[in-house]
Image (cartoon, rainbow, N blue to C red; front, side, top):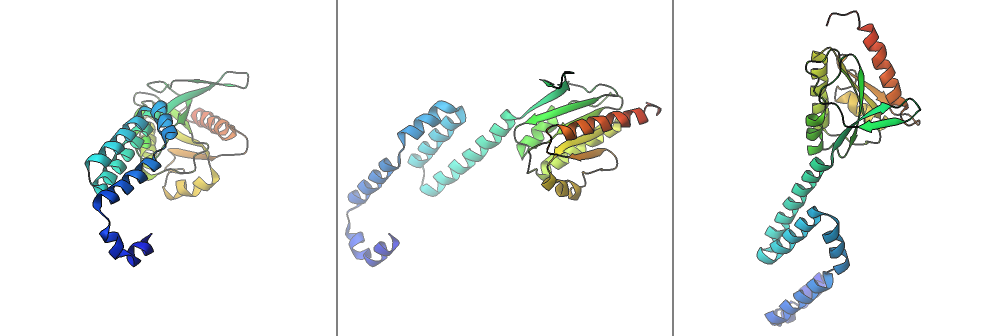
Length: 234
């Protein structure tokens, strides 16, 4: 197309503007996908917002400004989606080999490990949201949290900052943070972020081929550690 425009620039310049407008309208109509629009409209509210903003910006603004508005809107909607979808749950063994999932406690119990699992993204705003949803360790005696991270192959600096801050809160109450199910390729990242065995307040357990094995090991280690700390003054 570029070669044609350069080679035949004189002829192209002679084309009437209404004709060029008709070509653009035809191209726009052919680019519409009614089936895909219907799917977006029916599936999610964020999709509706993005669709309407994109359509309105394209009609009312220059192309460059419309692209900028659409990119900003998409980023804002993605961050909001991460905030809304992140969920923290507590896992408790039922005694028959199964795990019971229920909402985490608002405050941590004394001298007992609490296993937490996270659904949703832990990147960007998701990590900040995690920090607000973790149980409060203040007022507890030697609280222990085992945070399960299995399957996560990417974690940002925000997550490491939130984790380090929470570990310090636990340590202030005489407790400790355990991170279980950490993928092998993530172990080096934890080490470089100075989270791994950070002053005894964080202990990391690498994921194994057996589902839940590293979490069970972390809980066992936490109970052993609590027994060893039992003689310490509160």
